[in-house]
Length: 251
Ligand SMILES: [Zn+2]
Image (cartoon, rainbow, N blue to C red; front, side):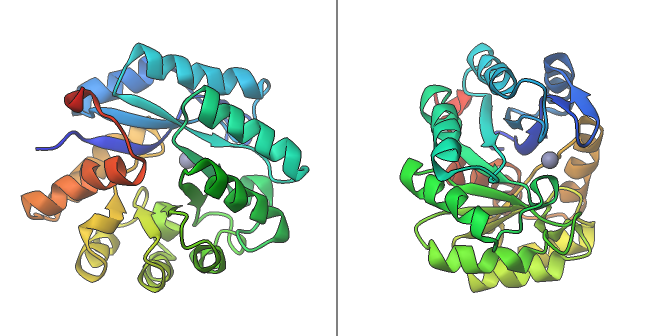
């Protein structure tokens, strides 16, 4: 069994979604459910942006090979300001990807303001995770297709893979663009089965988004009775490859 990696979790306050999970809670669920590694994102709106990123860096340093960060910053700013912030997180803190949240930032993936996200990802050599699902129409999975086609050298991960209702659309987006991967938190189990059968487990990654959801997401994947190879890909190997993670078991 490969290390299980949760590709989508949050640490600290989020003033938009009113969540605030701390290190103890994250480490607690990792221990309870045998999660070997976790990729953490700060809240979409926070009081102290730099500190919220540093908190994730501190978690990663305290848990080597088991914790990583994804940076998110509003694209409603100058190209220079955006680049400065995400470059700091990737180069100085070692974050492994950039997040675009269409709902929280009111910025659809095909909006002109979103271009700076893809340019930054290309320059820094990291994937872009795009939230999909809640917050349509700007969070429709298909809106990532133009960017994925325009930036074939950038890897895209659709968080929540359409969030259930738009799972079929996320599948079409991934089928149309080989550089699109799907993170499956909140998707119904039959949608995940469809992804495995139509797209393949090498394009799918396990994520949870919320500590209360960890056991549910694990049970969902296990309920599908996938082959060991497919299960390993979904639960950790795809995320390890996409985000170029150096995991504790490899150190
Ligand atoms: Zn999230």
